[in-house]
Image (cartoon, rainbow, N blue to C red; front, side, top):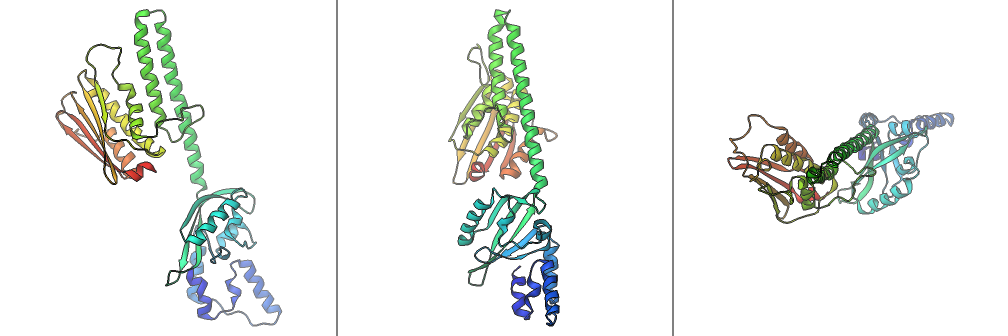
Length: 370
């Protein structure tokens, strides 16, 4: 981009070929011929190569001066926006976004920070497409900004896929809530004529409601009519997801015990969903095969913080004896690695001690917050 901006001074070329619009360049050449002027010097090979490279990109490519006025656009820009030469890149945004985008862009022109945002672009035929806008400052050897170059990358298909995925996730969550409600209603109906079963039915319904609330964490975004005021802290998440497995105060005799300790911290929505998936899977397996499956079992969840990381230690004791690591990787182990490893950069370790499973999760605190 910078090479194209300076090659005219290097080669001493006629400025006609610098006009980014191909039709405008042809018109300029025609006007020169009509005026009896000599044809403009052809572009040198290295300039033509770089221009061809920019035109071959699957992006809308542009450059601007230090105040944000366009100085170059590739052919794909004009194929999208039309033949007219815009004075600034915000002109092709959806009309509802132009003013705000231009105001934010002015701040970046002053600070020199990289600009990146998702925008709706208005095509010359009136259709609207989503694109990722990105612009970086061009600087001289002294670090002074001499201009800007940027791109628009088509993300319309990705946005459509995200919208469809969110809709399906909300629909699935709605159906799961309906199933919980139906099971709860069936239990209460069955206990109406059986007074001795009423306490059991009420306790079972309480656990079903707790499961439904825990399920709210395991969705990408809140849906209409669903609980949106979920706890925004790590301990709040743990208490919500583990609530269905807490001891029943109305029940006599020994029961599995759950203990949580350690410092708490705020977590973002995306991190909460991923953590909830993993904690829910660990709790389910503990209730089926581990400490929560036995009357004398105990689950301890301890959190610790250092300067940069959160450490969560899940320890099960008092359950069935553990012979050692499983012969194959189970879904819970795979889920923990995939859900927390790549998205949050977390390290997940499983220790199959004879007394019970110990899982250690270490994740950067800034990843949890964002």
